[in-house]
Image 1 (tube, rainbow, N blue to C red):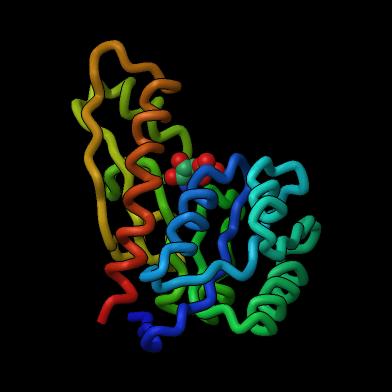
Image 2: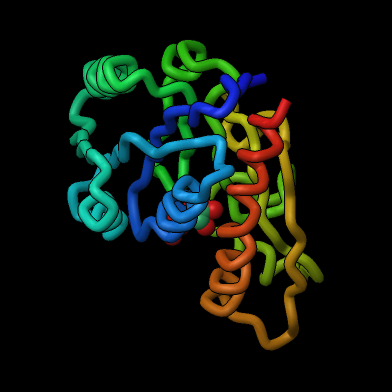
Length: 193
Ligand code: GRF
């Protein structure tokens, strides 16, 4: 478990690869007086990630790593994280798989949000697969990251009803609305003693 250190906010890094709508909701959450986190660093593997704009808007330091060599890149990321005294890492649409070494280095301190009701639909294309299987519900999950894909301990989940008329696009939108509420709640849960 990650322990909060009293009234001082815990330093957090958010890892993204794309739109960054979860990043935006986490930044808003972090600005609240009673929020347990302050976001000090944004990391992306993609220089074109739209979410990088939130670093500029909110004046948060952002770093892009090109991942030509995974081991070297992770070493650079680890040193960046240690320099900034980051204590919690939130993956938010980050498309690279972190190595076992990386995960071990920050054991119990890495969270991820996934757009399905885990353990169902690990991996990609969750909404498409849920619709194709005529599922009645989809949803989202915030979980701790371990070395197996989308398999760490679940912190919180939120169910979302799939209606007959739902498409991947409409379901993605509905689930994202819930993701933006769930991630902050999960952080509160993990960091409250
Ligand atoms: C979200 O659906 C998240 O659950 C998944 O990737 C998507 C990222 O969306 N891991 P965004 O970049 O936060 O808008």
